[in-house]
Length: 115
View 1: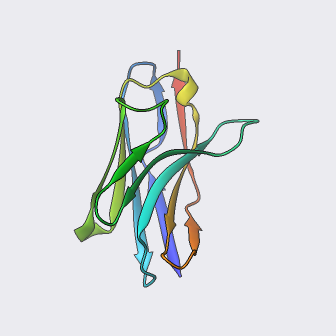
View 2: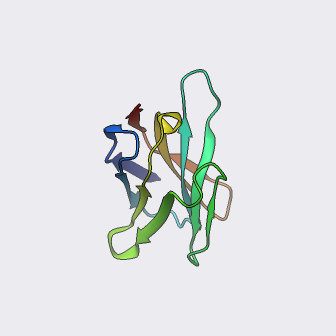
View 3: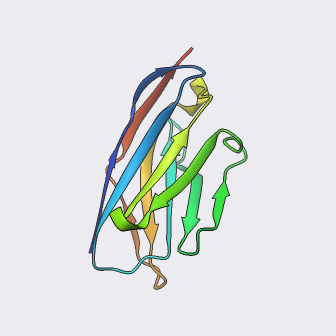
């Protein structure tokens, strides 16, 4: 089993920054971790992912503003969010996937950007 614990959400003004953290525990090997978000009345969408080799991918809406990175020693990934916009308001979920198709989710952390 894998447990993912997110932190770092909150309320920020447009143009501000936040950093989300996701600490992973458990014995399952994972090869990809990422962040997704879900705004009210919208489907959950991919924000950014990072593979075991360090390759990253971003949604077009966050490219140039968000950065995903990791600290392997702490089994933690981060999402640095800069130049936040009101449309970034959502619950942000940490996700990880194993090579065998197992998928795990965190409990989510709320990010609210005021205009």
